[in-house]
Image 1: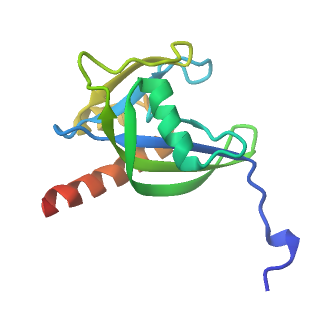
Image 2: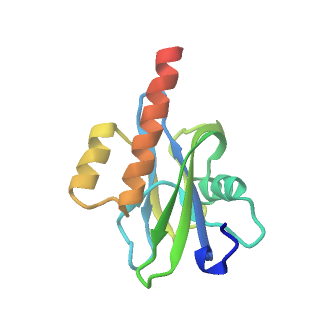
Length: 158
């Protein structure tokens, strides 16, 4: 039985984000502006606030970091990670689609101190960012890869 508390692993941090792929097959990334991750690219994501549903947090973070309203399509994955200080974090990501406003001229971050820029990258550009260690973390690539798998599956069914 698993009633023994020693089998429970407390995870106090949670983050949630979205992967948005446009009709051209490009993925939306944000360029970090915070110390420690400045200039690195990541999916729109951030911390889940106390009492907040992770899916709601992902939609909120998309708005705050890109100025875009998005709708979740599918949960891509939930990954357990470790912060530099050793604290565990549970990361959620959804494939999502933009529902407003339109992308003309470009996404505009709400929190300029946290996000320098938001823009779309082709799959080849994402691979180049990863090879150059310009993606914020390996999880970024895992979530993007999962999103492209789902996106291709949906395209094949259409």
